[in-house]
Length: 195
View 1 (cartoon, rainbow, N blue to C red):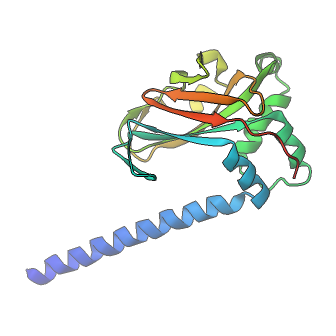
View 2 (tube, rainbow, N blue to C red):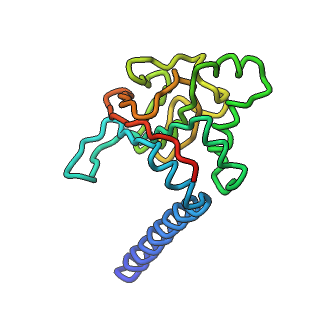
View 3 (cartoon, one colour):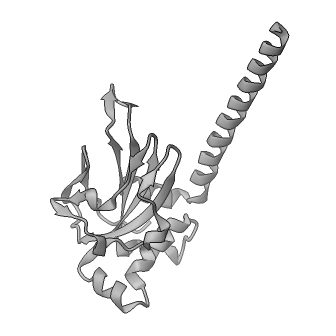
C-alpha cells in the first residue's frame, strides 16, 4: 500500500512539473512573437491592475481576483508596421480600428483612441469592461470595439481574453488615472518615438 501512495505522489509531482514547464514555455513563446522594438513600445504603454489584490512588498500580489493589463495603442504606432510587423495579432487588430472600412467604427473613433484590455481570471470573476474609467470617463457599451461574442462576463480561474475599447484621446506627457472596480493606477502617456 505504501508503494502505491508513493507512486501517486511521484506521478502527481511529474504532472505538476510538466504543467509548470508548459506555462513557462508558453509565456516565453508569447514574448518571442514581439520584436524587441514592439516589446519596448508595448511595455511603456501598458499598465497592470490587480482586481481585489493586496500588494505585499514591491512585486507580490496576494488574493487577486483577476489581472487586467491596459495597453494604449495610438494610431501613430501603425507607422512602425511598414518596417516591423513582428507583433502579436491583438496589436494588429487594435490598430486596425483606426482604419476600419466600417462607417460606424470610423464614427466611433473620431477624436478617440484605442485601449486594449487583456484580462485573466485568477478566481471566479465577473468581468465587465464598462467598470473601467479613464480620467473619470466611464467606458460605455458603445465604446467596446470588440464584438460581444469575443469576451465573456462570468470567468472561472484560468479564463483570459483581449478586447479593445475606444476612449477620449490622450495627450503625450499627460498623467492618466485608470480605475477598474477597486483597483487604480496612474499612467504617464509616453511620447511617440519612431524607432
